[in-house]
Amino acid sequence: MAAFWGGFDGRRGMIYHLAIDRDYRRQGIGKRLMQEFELRLRAKGCLRYYLLVTKDNGEAVDYYESIGCKVTNLHVLGKSL
Ligand SMILES: CC(C)(COP(=O)(O)OP(=O)(O)OC[C@H]1O[C@@H](n2cnc3c(N)ncnc32)[C@H](O)[C@@H]1OP(=O)(O)O)[C@@H](O)C(=O)NCCC(=O)NCCS
Image (cartoon, rainbow, N blue to C red; front, side, top):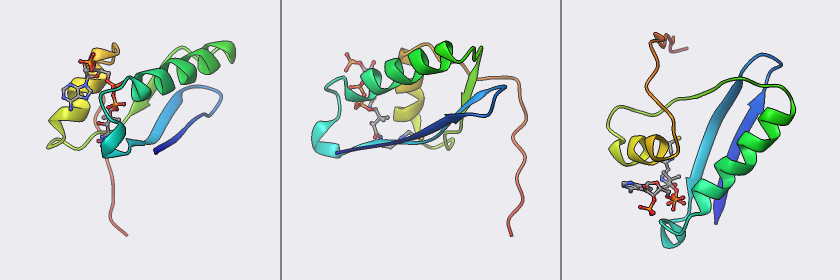
């Protein structure tokens, strides 16, 4: 029904994966998972978390912006292996 993979490396939080089964979207599940994630990060002293969204995933951007996330000024670099 839902998959969530996030963590805290001692400096910053990171969300690696978040997906809600299509039949269960727009019911507030994603938002509640993020609220719990933020609570746990705060309890560990984490000040900021990051996540990656592909540029063609406008729905996910809308979702993350609705819970207060903003596009950062970071460059994202990667290398295919
Ligand atoms: C993005 C995703 C995780 C959102 O989960 P969700 O449980 O449906 O989200 P919620 O019901 O908690 O929505 C909270 C708010 O986000 C916004 N939102 C969520 N889905 C949206 C969409 N498809 N389009 C626009 N806004 C959206 C809305 O403001 C929504 O509040 P509302 O329903 O009262 O209008 C889900 O659509 C998903 O699994 N998508 C596929 C995987 C993916 O793209 N993951 C993110 C990339 S890592």
